[in-house]
Amino acid sequence: MQNFECTNCGGKIFFANDFCLKCGSKTAFDPETIAMVSLSPIPETNTYQALNGDKNGPVRRYCANAAHNACNWLAEESSEEGFCAACELNDLIPNLGEPDSLEAWQDLERAKKRLIYSLLRFGLPTDATHLGKGRLTFNFVRGQMTGHLNGVITINITEADSVERERRRQYFDEPYRSLLGHLRHESGHFYWNVLIEGTDRIEEFRSLFGDERLDYSQALARHHDSGPAEGWQNLFVSAYASAHPWEDWAETWAHYIHMVDAVETAETEGIDPRAAGITFGFKWPFKKYDAYRAESFQSLQEHWIPLTVALNRLNRSMGHSDFYAFVTPAGAYKKLAFIHRAIRQSASWTKPG
Ligand SMILES: [Zn+2]
Ligand SMILES: [Zn+2]
Ligand SMILES: [Zn+2]
Image 1 (cartoon, helix red, strand yellow):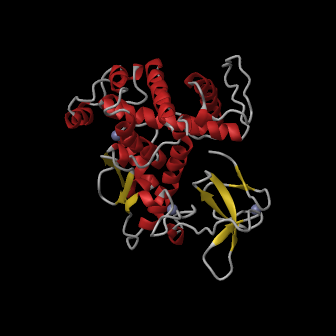
Image 2 (cartoon, protein in one colour):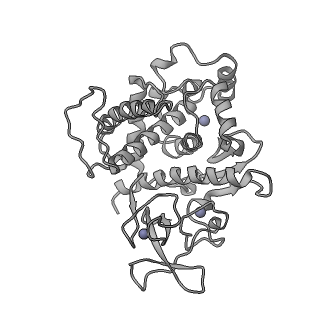
Image 3 (cartoon, helix red, strand yellow):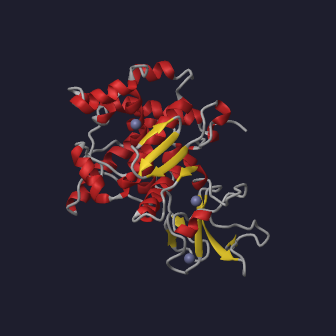
């Protein structure tokens, strides 16, 4: 995540803030510029103009979900319901009259906004209907299984309950479980359809991840009944990734986004990860390195590995569990590199015009 400054006072503003903690100006995230903006209210309306901006600049309003404290993004001008580019993707939200549903949904929206931020930074489309691949869609509901179908991501909102989530993490013997992790994973299934299915990348996909034509429901049932295959640690980012090539892709996809976003955040905070005696013989190029646009996977990896070692040590010094609780085998790095290339070849910014 980038660092944002208030355009009125220069104070630091955080991605989820709807006002500046220093000068009190209203703030919002503008998905068009992928940046936070400070706003000046237009009297007697619910509308705003960018502060210190062009007096004749466009009139802006908050997303309709700001009324529920569930969004701080600017509404899309084209949205009839007044939603932002991220909330437009919701098909179902929980019944807000039920106890705890509002808080759960607010947490899920915060995590979802971080996912959409990454997709915007990568230049990946959220709507692939022109390719016959549908549109990324979110259903936040109570009592349904978390999962995906044809680009529709369903999240069981009980995952937002931190006690319940920890119980499931232990039950499934996972090193890490978070709302953002779920959302990044499930988005991977949509982008498999967009970037791999029916494209000339399918053969390389199969050589790295295996043949996805393997019966999916049987593979998942086998995984849940008898656990991961022996030796999975040598090939996969997680035990669950060994269940089926699609799950391997989605798990690796989520790891790739973890990696890029964490490196960007470290970079914008000026964190220098010369950790645990690991040296790569390079100098951390402060403020110059853009993890979302990194040319080579290797350079990303060279930023990432020392960062995870440093942050794990930092977390241990606070008595927290590890920041990055995975051991990534060499085989999984090849898959991460494949995802890196697939995103870059498809991203809007790499195409001329
Ligand atoms: Zn300010
Ligand atoms: Zn919104
Ligand atoms: Zn999955």
